[in-house]
Amino acid sequence: LGSAEIVDLVTILSRLTTNFGIKILSQLPSFPRFLSALCTMGKWLLESSLAECQRVEGDVDSVEGLDWRNDAIGQILQCSDAMADDYWIVSGTGTDPAASNASQALATMLAPLYGPYCLCRVKMSCMEEHYAAREGTELDEIREEISAYSMEEEMTSAASLGRLNVMVSVSTL
Image: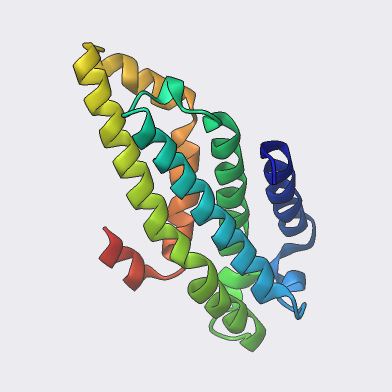
């Protein structure tokens, strides 16, 4: 798949989540494959971004395809956030068996994306900082760039992903 196709694919998956919600999606026999596709695509995007960042030794301005990969990862995280924070899941986990089953599916099939996400972002940030230090770039400039990339929103969505399976997420950190 090319870059445009990958972004289109994750956008479709995200729209399905937004339009139908987890209550409907979790009733489909293909729901486990849906979650698996999100997790697999997310891991691949993170790994390829990290490999590119390593190739250019932290010079993120030289990373090929960084923008579309970040867009796709952002879509996956927003999709995960929408499912994890869905009112049906949050309010019905203790009383509704279907909500409990959906929550368990999220915890086992989608939450494993949290560890690779944290590892990849930390390694990339470290490489970027080392590159900036070698080039003599001010850290304040880097912080402004991070804000420009809307990393705060991405980190908030990643936190929702981490809450799906707290024990595993804590061991990641």
